[in-house]
Structures are given as C-alpha cells and as structure tokens.
Amino acid sequence: MKIRPPAIILAVIALLLAAACGGPSSESGTSKPVGEPRIQQGEAAASPERPAGREAGAPEPAETGAPEERDSAPGQVSTFALDVDTASYGHARRILTEGGRPDPSQVRPEEFVNSFRQDYAEPGGDGFAVHLDGARLPGSGAALVRVGLQTRGADPETRRPANLTFVVDVSGSMAEPGRLDLVRESLHRLVDQLGPGDRVAVVAFSDEAETLVPMTPATGRAELHAAVERLTVRRSTNLEAGLTAGYAEAARTFRSMATNRVILLSDGLANTGETSWQGILNRVKESAGRRITLLCVGVGREYGDALMEQLADNGDGAAVYVGSADDAREVFAERLTTTLDLRARDAKAQVAFNPSVVESYRLIGYENRELAAEDFRDDARDGGEIGPGHSVTALYRVRLRAGASGQLATATVRWQDPDTRHPAEASRSLDEGDLSGALWEGTSPRFQVDVVAASFAEHLRSREATAGLGLRELGGHAARLAETTEDPMVTELARLIDRAAALG
View: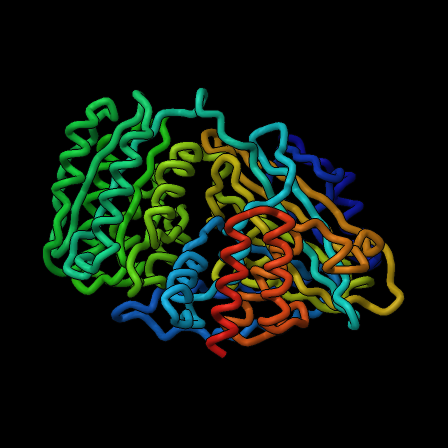
C-alpha cells in the first residue's frame, strides 16, 4: 500500500501552527488503505491499564465519577478501541424495572448510547462511514460533539457460514427463575434460525465442563434441540473450565472461510477455578488467537458484570445482557443470525481537537477502552470487532475558546480487513460553524436521544448533569422524543428515567 507523503507533511505543518486538528487527515467521509504506521506528532496521552473484573481475587473498581476535561494541547488526541457492548444498559434496565438502582460501577455511558438505533448513512463498501455533528449547550461556552461510525448492513444471502460453540453456565446460581430457562429458550430460537451451512456445538459447565454435542450441522436440528433440553442446573461455577473446553472445540473444528465464534451464556459469577478475566483468557489465548471471536451473553439479576465485560473487551468480542423473552428474541432470533459476519477487526477511533478552537474536552464513557495516541496505528494493539450494520457512537463534551472559529475536530477510524488483515482508514472533519446553536431544536431526534441516554447514565453513576439537566427534565425530553421517533426503546427509556427520578 502506498503512503501519501503530502498528507503527512500537511498534517505536521498543521500541528506546528496549531491552526488545524492534530490528527490524521483525509477527504471528508472517504476511506483508504494505509501502509506502515506513521509517527504521531505531539505528546501522547498516557495509556491507562484496563481494569480487571471485580470477581474473586480481582482488584477494587475504579472511582465511578466522570473524568475531568483534558486540555486540547497541540498534538494531543483522544484514542479508543471501538465497542458495541450493550450489557450495561440491559442490566440497568432490569434493576430499575424491579425498583432498584444500578451499581454506579456497572454503568457505562457508551453502552447506554450504543443500545439505541442511530440515523447514520451506511458506507458503500465493507468499512465505515464516519459521521460528525454537534450542538452548543445553552448558557455556556461548551458543546457536545457526536462521532458516529456505521458499517454496511448484512446480506443474509451472501453471509459466510458460521461455526458457533455455545458455552452454557449450568451452575447452581443459574437455578434462579429467568436464567437457565431463558438460556434454553434463546438457544432453541437460534437453532431454528440457522442456515444449512452453519454448525453448532454445545458445552455445559458447572464445576467441570462437558461437551453435550460436538460441532454438528444446523440441519441436525433434532439433535441440537435435544442437547439444549439436557441443560440442567448442577453445582458451582467454573467458568474457566467452560471456556477452555469451548475454545478447544471451536479450535478443533475451525473453518477458515467461516465465522468462528464462542458464545458464552452465564451470570458471570465465577467461584471455582480461575476467576479473573486475565487468567481465563490466558488459558484460551492460543485458541482465541485463531480468529475465534467471543460473544458474552449475560443473564440474571445478580450478574458478574465486570468479569463478563472484560472477557468480551479483551477476547475480541462483545457483551450483551438478556433479561426477558423479548431480549432473547431480539438478540438470538433477530440480531445474531444477521450479524454473524465481521466487517472490521481491531477497529479504533481517534479524534483530534483543534487547540485554537477547543480549550478542553472530555470523552463520555469508554474509560475501559481508552488507548494511547501511538496505539492508533499500531496494528498489534487490540481494537474492537465490528459486525454488519453496527453503529458506534461517542459523545464528547468540549469547551470552546471564546470567539474562535474554524475546524473544530477531525475523527478517524482505523480497522483491519477480517480476512486479509490489511488496514484501512476513514475520516471526517467538523467546523465550529457546523455546530447547531440549539441542542433541543436544531439537531436530529437521534442526536437528542443519544444525549438523553448519555446524560441518564452519567446521572446514575456520578449524579453529573452532562447537558445541564436533572432527571425530571431529561424524562420530559425522552417522552417528547418517544413520540417523535415512535421508537418503543425510547418510550422505555423515558419510563426508566421516571423510575430513577422517583427513587431520588
């Protein structure tokens, strides 16, 4: 692949003059293959260590308050691995519905936002379309900037076959109503949706792991349904044994031209064997390195959120939460079968703010996915795995310099082709003049839903009013947006905000 020297020279000059953003540049909304990693100018932000889960033997969680804003110094950029997890919102929804308040340490704003449908245009190819917009916050010199990334939707007729290895928790804690019975219902739904080229294996685990059915063509539905019915509650939770057996089966039956995925269904309450995500992933590292991705599906009111999230984030996967039959239908019957393919591996985003326009900035959420600036073009550093039709949204709160104008930010996404590992990038820029002057009137309904969802999450974890509004005002905006969008999920969001407000 050829590197474009003029682009690099222009970028360096721009950084030195502090007249434009310090990140990589390309034509608005375009993507291109790239060659060797280019040297990042300016002082890079330090790379925080990813926190471990909070299960047995793990360190205490980090503080849940929102991070402070960062100065927009020349050459300083915000870099993070993409994430399509939604488990945090799903679990919080269940807790609030049952009259409780979620643990602040389990509230991740990006997962609240990414739970909702977006309005981004799809790209023509297999990469990303980059969307960038924003709005000023009333009565202040601040603004909210939205970075939206979208992949092309799935084509069921052309998707590659799938090798799916289900690793199912049948420990004693899964006996709670709404856990194992929901898992069985979910698996039955999925088996009925698979095509003739797909294959399924089922591994059950409690204190030990057992392969109930080895990799079997989906056409053998009777055998697969029978294996699902044999899932019964047993003893303790040795999640390590389950994943080790599951990855071993996936590696043994690996197909290079198929999507190879391990799907863990568990409450994440590991109490036997290795209980930290680092130790568990170390045991399956060799198998996981063979392009076998991981999907963590959480169930149960008492839920090991930290362990499941870190397994997903560090195991080339995603985490979702299933709390009802409707959730199971959405995840297994509607979404999973159409998103089995991958559009991008190790996807990362980098947003460069122009220090002559932006005084400081703060990324809302993504604390566990933050990277150092130099990691952006280091293709050995792990990013996120993104499937067809997925959108990823990041919101920034920025403080603008009084009277400044010009380019405000440049957002760039970098990813690798799932098969060839060839890297590519796409970028888009935003000018200060492109900001809407009215957050609740001059922006799209979906932008406003994102702001409400992020603000709700920030309130739940730190009581911070991201958009300057309390829960009552947020609930009013959510109710209005529910009518505008006619989206049942936004209606539900309004109901959850009202419940949280009633709790005080």
